[in-house]
Image 1 (cartoon, rainbow, N blue to C red):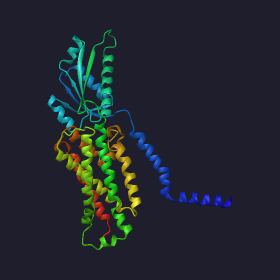
Image 2: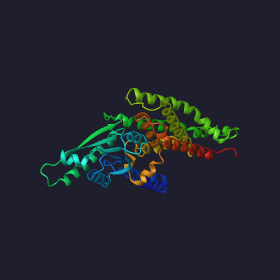
Image 3: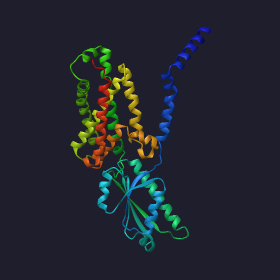
Length: 367
C-alpha cells in the first residue's frame, strides 16, 4: 500500500499547487452561494412608483408617506393627469401608479368608503403580484392604525389594474428572457471557437499574412454568423408570437433592429473570448459558463434587478441581456418606440464597439 499512498500524496500536492484548480474547488462554490443567496429573494425593495393624487388631502398624503417610508417603494414622479400614466410605464422607469380618487378623505369620512386604483406593470407577473400585495398591506395597516378605536372601520377599496398582461400570463416574463438566453449562448458559443479553430487547424499563419486589417478579419468572421443568428432570431420571435401569444404592439422594424444589435454584441463577445483561449473546447466552456448564470440571474430575466444588493445592481449594468430584455418587453408588450428604448440601444451599441475593438487589439497581426 505504500506506493498507493505515495501516489495519493503526489496527486494531492499536484492539486494544491495548481491555483486554478483551487479556485474551481473552493472559490467557485463560494461565489455561487453568495450570488444565489443575494439574488433569489421573494421580497421587494425600492420599487419605483408614481403617484396621481386627485384629492391632495391629509389622508392621501399620510397614506403616500406610509408607502414611501416602508422601504419597499420609492416615488419616481408625481403625475397630474391620467394621460401621463401610459408614457411613464413605456419609459420603463416605474412599476406601479397609485391613483387616489377625488375627495378621498371626505368620502372616507361621510360614505365610509374610498377608492385607490393600483395600476401595475404586469409584464413581469410575479413582481406585479408582490407589488400589489405589499401596497394593499400598507394601505390596510394605515386604515387600522388610524381607526383603531372605532367599532365600524371605514373601507379603502383597492382596485387593481394589471397593465399589459391582464391575465398574468407567465409567458410575458419568460419568453423575452428565454430569447435573450438562447441568442446570447448560441451566438457567443458559435463565434468563441473561430480564432481557436484557426490555431488548432494551423491556418492562423494564412490570416496573419493576409492584407486585411484585424478589424476586417474579425468582421469577416462574424458576418456569416450574423446571417445565421438573424434567421434564428426570426424563428424565436415568431414562436413567441404564434405559440405563446406574446403580443407585438410596437414597431416590428425596431424590434428586429434591437434584436440584430444584441446578436451582434453576443457574436463580438464570443470572438473576444476566442482571442483569450487556445483551444476550441476551452473557448466553448468559458463562453457557456461565463454567460449562462449571469444571463439567468443578473439580467432581470427571473429576478428583478432593483431587489438585489447595490453591488450586484452595478454588476447587472454590465450584462448585455439586461438591456435587450428591457427593450424587447418595451417594444413587444408595451408598444414602446425608440424614444423609450434609446438608452438600451445606445448601451448595446457601445458594448458592440468595445468588444470588437478589444478583439482586434488581442488578435495577433503580422505587425
